[in-house]
Length: 292
Image (cartoon, rainbow, N blue to C red; front, side, top):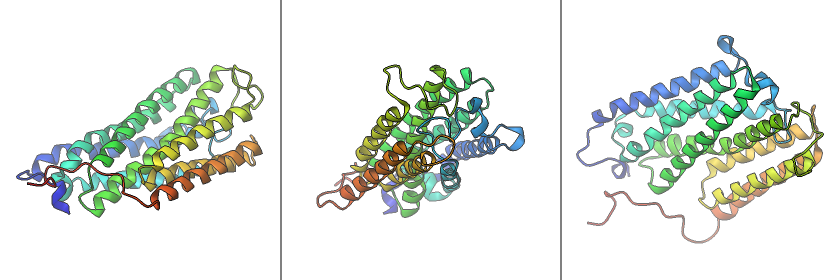
């Protein structure tokens, strides 16, 4: 099984430099995460950007507890970086393709946290949203690469597919929240103000429900790949959006119920595709696996 991910005649030593770059990227992400938590004199994300990134800023802002998923993601990124130094990680043909995108995703996460520290919302909100879009694109590319080639071991499947699957799912939810914060600022709304809606006249609750429907549709599309990690992260974010809207300073029970229903739809679609009879989504074989 492991041989499928190792290039014949390749030397693990040749992958030492990329492994170091991956480790440095992981450390940078962790360092900026600490800064974003308020350590080292940084402003906590909840208080940054004029409060537009707080859990009660918009109808689709998740509750504060939702961000605990970062502990799991960061632990996975650190484990992934350490695994790169092991012979299997350094010699993996699959990781030779995946590793640069993985490192880019970690550096982009650090860039987002740095942009969030900019005091002016007029600068920080567009900057964070722009970085978030690039990060989402990178993670989508990573997801496609993981689908295209099989993992060489369970360790690789857990650390690479699992970690970046969770990462992708959470960033799907975070991108929506970031976009809502930027739109709210552009429309002149204060964080937590539910009154005006979109330019078309839709009230805030209707706008939130529409956005949640889009997220649910994205989750259903990902469910077709039969990968649970991104679905779990999307459902996690939706559940905490529901919790935040069922109470707190920006209570919108209708939006909370819609978020809960969206979470059920995402998980239900995952189960339906996972256990549906039929052939699994095929993975592209590596040259080592191709028939002679």
